[in-house]
Length: 178
Image (cartoon, rainbow, N blue to C red):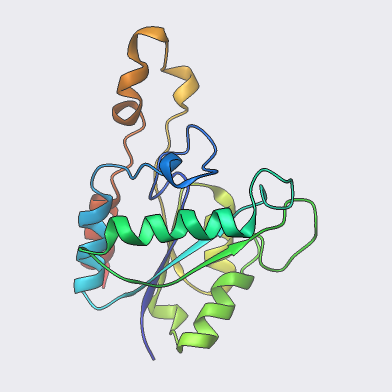
């Protein structure tokens, strides 16, 4: 059996100040590529598990999301490879796949022979952590800063600095634990 790290997307890998409805909207945080590289080189299978309720709400289509995820894979191709990017398209519809339920993690674990006791879920919201725990993973919650509390007209260009998410540091901590 293999070990894996399951990453939430928005707020963990990329800035989620605005909705990501097209590839150009996906802006990776500083340190994400290096963090992913470290996890990949340590032998973890990497997955993205993301709620994308905007599909059900009509903000984007499955095809739009595929283009966004192709862009994500292109951005990190020199650092790592995602085994799979899985998403739940529902917002209102009840689904075992929508976090905080563990459906996406469990399906990927079954498909790729993942040992969930040796695996991690990394997220920025309680729903991510709950999904990971219910699946039987260890979890790591990335700190979030509410950008609305710190952004004004004068510092809009500093948005990424204000919302620093240090995935590289989180991965280093995960690797220390193992």
